[in-house]
Image 1 (tube, rainbow, N blue to C red):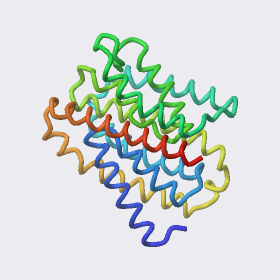
Image 2 (cartoon, rainbow, N blue to C red):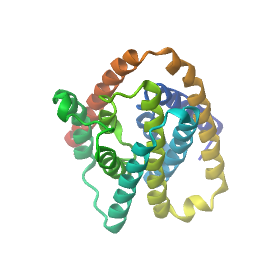
Image 3 (cartoon, helix red, strand yellow):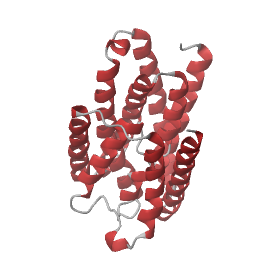
Image 4 (cartoon, rainbow, N blue to C red):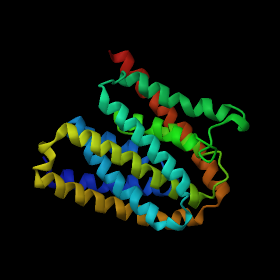
Amino acid sequence: MFSLPVLAALAAIAVVTSFISGIFGMAGGMLLIGFLLLMLPVPVAMVFHGVIQIAANGWRSWLWRHHINWSVVLQFGLGAGFSLMVFSSFAFVPPKPVVLIAVGLMPFVALAVPQRIAPNIERRGQAFTAGVIGGGLQLVSGVTGPILDIFYVRTGMTRQVNVSTKAAAQVMGHLTKVIYFGGLVGRSVAGDPEQWLVMAFAAGCAVLGTTLSRSFLDRLSDKQFYYWTRRVILALGAVYVAQGVWQMAGR
C-alpha cells in the first residue's frame, strides 16, 4: 500500500500542508484529506488525517504556547466533545454535497453581516458553538473547512494568538475524529504496525512543515495576516461550493 513514491508524496504533502496551515491556521487540512482519500478507505483516511493534524496543530500550539487563549480552547473542546456524544448515539450523515455547499457559503454570509452580530470566537458562548459545529463537521466530512475560520477573522487577536489558539482548539476537534473513526476501523489499524509507522512518519513531516512556517508568520504584520486570511477563507469557500455543486450534478 505504501510504496516509496507514495511515502515521498505523503511526506511532501504533509510538509506543504502543515506549512500553509502554520502561516494562516487553515487550508492545509483540506488539501491533506483530499490526498489521503485517494489511497485509503474513508475511515482509515480519517484516522490518518486526525493523527497528522494533531501532530501539526499540537506542535504549532507548543511553538506559540505563550499566546494561547485557553478559555477559548476549553470551551471549544467541550463543544467538540458534545458533538462526539451526539454523533456516537445515532448514525446521521447528511448528503456530502449539501455539507460542502453549506460550509462553502458560510464565509460569504458571515463576512457580509455587520460587525456587531458577526461570529467572534472571543464572545460569550461562541467558542462552545464553534466546537459543536466544528466537531460535527469533523465527523461528517473529516475537515471543518472555512466555517470555523469565520469565528476568528473578526477578532481583536494578534496573529500569534489567532494561530496558536485555533491550533490548540483544532487538536480537540481532530482528537474526537480519531476516537470516532478509530472505533469504526478497530483492529484494521490497531493491529497493523505498518500503518502506525507511516502515521508517525507523516506526523514528523507535519511537525517539520509547522516549524518552517514560524519565521514566515513572524514576518507578517497583523494587518497583512487578516488581509490574506479573509481572501483564503473566501477562496476555500468557493472551492467547497464548486465541489458540492459538481458532486450534486454528477448524481
